[in-house]
Length: 227
Image (cartoon, rainbow, N blue to C red; front, side, top):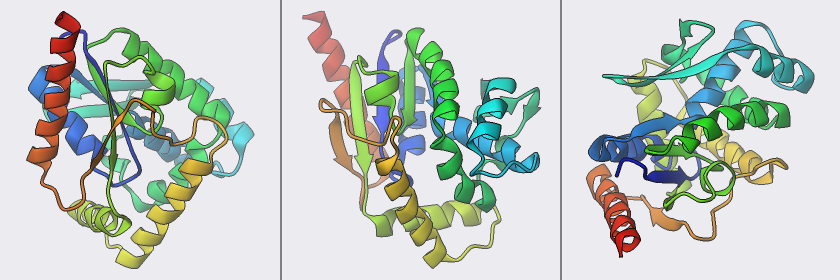
């Protein structure tokens, strides 16, 4: 399993981070949450007063900051310029601004460089929106997770309330729908299912069953590779 590369893509709220983290733990591989990297850049931009629509300023920011993912006991944490910003990644303001920031080509190119560097080392489970198509097109296992908008909105509401945020469930649903449109329409590296990815609909399913399905794919792929 040490050199296995697993790409998990899908829309917001489909369960990518939870499933990817659990699969990585089961296989003893590095987990990389690429969405957290974009959220990190977004948070820094907001702290610096940069307009999420200012592509030039965001491009300069992405080139200037040092982004690092550090695996720790409680999961992978995001550090930017020596500061652990993980606690701020799920702020509602970040969630609203991240589609615009992540859609800037220069920002995506910079983050993709970092992600591809991690992918080249192998032994990784990486989740995002363009992993199986742009970051690890030759990954041994590719999965595309999806779920109904209603289900994804319920999950996001529960997650945000768990972080102590007071949110409007209807607004969360609208923001997810808008994020879906933005991700799919993005000119540079849009959200799209890789042709050879296994589609898994997580609507109404428990985490354990989805994790086991992905692990079965990994084991089957390894067995085929040994034939």
